[in-house]
Length: 254
Image 1 (cartoon, rainbow, N blue to C red):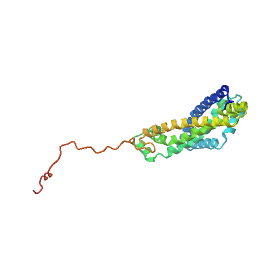
Image 2: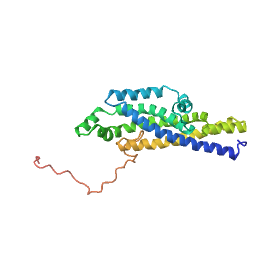
Image 3: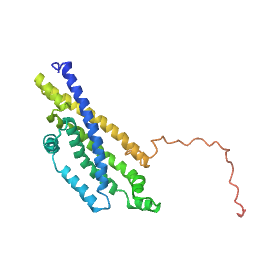
Image 4: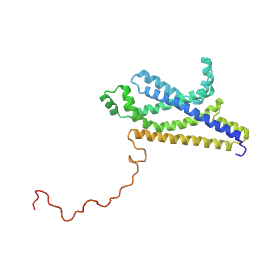
């Protein structure tokens, strides 16, 4: 640890910032792909379902690392222009994890009870209005926990970009290890860095989940719909004391 100078620490800290950028950009692209492909897989037209299903199977069944190599080395040969390593990585991670997310979207939409769609029809909603006002608000809370897992996997998957020379945490760690000839402290440090980033993302997604459930009237797991309130103890009767026997009801035999 003492052999790691401030200049080497700066490499690691710059790597953290690059990793955050990769995660945010890839997650934004992945979210667009996930909702686009996920909604397309529930479309009424079979050709739309077929094409979106083909995309899902192709990107789910290919290696993200090999696809990253293909984006960076093979794609320029066909189109004559070179992607920057950073954008080749973002494109690969966004398209790959977007395919995984599309299954989350499709499953959450399929879990919405059919009666909710029928209610939308009864209100004369168009299919787009049913999706926007009825289906998605109820499906969204069920999407958030799987999206949380995918976001953490995406964060850890950004380590693949170091192979292309992108200066993320893993790339900075390899430079520091070469400079200090110490593997244990360097890789222990970046393990802690990844854990801290994942913990922050998890807490943020938990807040999103609570907000999403509150929006449809669902209580967060482990809590009652009303926040834990103390039971009110019965206090003394403040009205006039009742003495004697009750008066007989009208019409009752005296």
